Image (cartoon, rainbow, N blue to C red; front, side, top):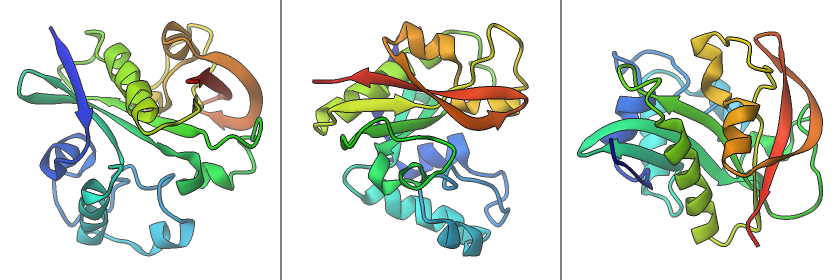
Length: 190
């Protein structure tokens, strides 16, 4: 399998990865960390999809997509931290004042999990941030120490995934997900 990672500017492919089966359903659409809390709470149903459509038309788009040939198989949300909820999150510390980027959601399509898609997808997110001049990129994965993670909570990634991509632990956080602590991992891009 040769995975190609591209900017997430194709709304239909983003919808395939993070959208609901019913367009009027209230699901995350990977907006919870990307837009202001109030806007997130007020958006419902089709409005959520329309907001993602708007983000896909922006430069930079809201993340990257992984493709196996023409089929979309993965999604990673990646954007400047200043444009996300991580800019104000009390549980995830700021290591310094650099204008870092954040990668906070890594999703692999059912049927393609366990095939190594997350590795080139995370590498593509790093290259995407680098192409926009990011001095560093952060992730906030679970430090699960090899323990099994419930599939719905695996979207933040694992320490091992980020370490294999060259990230190092930069700080502890007070965030816990599915009983596992999240840590701040960082990769310098300068």
